[in-house]
Image 1 (cartoon, rainbow, N blue to C red):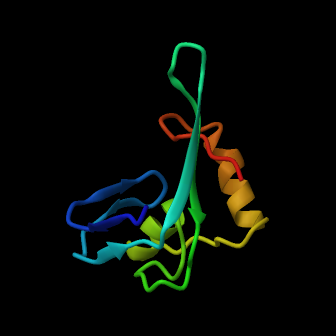
Image 2: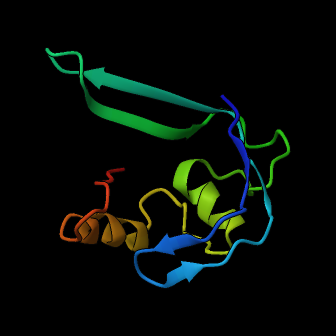
Image 3: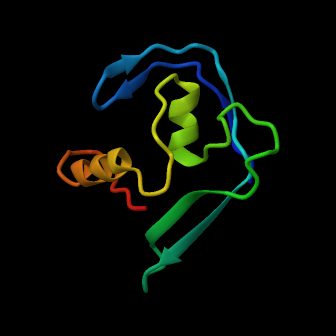
Length: 104
């Protein structure tokens, strides 16, 4: 899958407030995804953002999932595996309301 879009509407960032749209084009690298369903057929876990080819020409600097979205909005997150900042943000998200849980 190769996600695409344009930053055309305001984004309510949970920490820095509203980010105004810039019209920036979002062309993500090809990504793989997976889901695990529970016994009722509902999504129990979804994994996203596994970049399959970061050299295909995109507007995210080869970043997938939320890292690519934030990159296009001008809010660059450290996408390095094991990044202390990323781990801290994931831990903090466990205590903030209305923030999806994230694990690496």
